[in-house]
Amino acid sequence: MEGLLSLAIWVIVLVIVFLAISGLRVVQQYERGVIFVLGRLTGAQGPGLFWVPPFISRMIKVDLRIVTLTVPPQEVITRDNVTIKVTAVVYFYVVDPTTAVVNVMNFMQATTQIGQTTLRNVLGQSELDELLAQRNKINHELQTIIDEHTERWGVKVTAVEIKDIELPATMQRAMAKQAEAEREKRAKIIHAEGELQASAQLAQAAGVIGSQPSALQLRYLQTLTEIAAEKNSTIIFPLPIDLVQPMIEMMQRHTEIQGQEQVDRPHVTPTYSVPRGEPVSR
Image 1 (cartoon, rainbow, N blue to C red):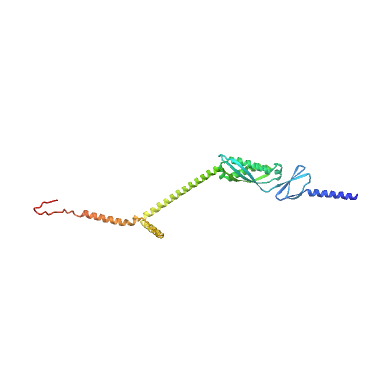
Image 2: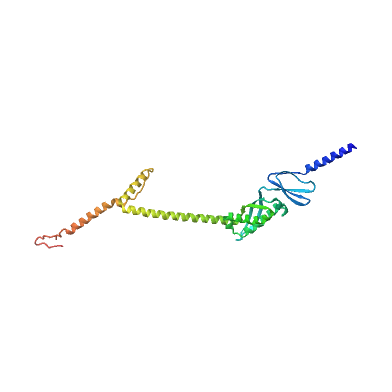
């Protein structure tokens, strides 16, 4: 009889130990355990080691770390009727584990679906140029809209980034031609501005040289020095008119003096002596 009693005691002790051990739960630092006892929510526990009643309770672990969710490629028609394929990334984390478990069946799937639909709606209201040039603005708009939907699920969306935009081949060629034409336009404008500045500087230099005749001679000598430094070659160099101008003026004055002397010289009529008896022939 005592043997049976001691055996029963040992069985009861083993059952109690088993129940005590089976009710222990360990939750990591980045997790929270949402506990339901007989279907009723009792709250979130963790991190660390704690005990829950076995067989009548259920615990769901919720990860509180930031989740990187890749939205599958979505075909979107922009407002200017261009079909593109867009891939985005959503960054979010759970701020309220209890709400994330109670208010939505699967908050990961729900966030993925709301991200896809919001991506189509927002990009469909934007033009292609706006999508390419103002990506930060569109990312902020996507983040605001998605976060409004996930707030009641206990999920906080921190950022939404458009990862990749795939354009049709015809659109890529058109954009390449447009970019090339824009570059040519800028090159022509820069060249025209350079010509304008160069002409202004040349006009200023011509004014300085014109006001100082000796400046032209100095420039001429400088050019000769630069040519002499090059390799031996035959060079035809125009002679500046300013160097021979004094000689030309001297010759002109000499010519004028000779002409004046011929005008001032008295005119002598030639006389002819005719012998007597001979006819005069003229």
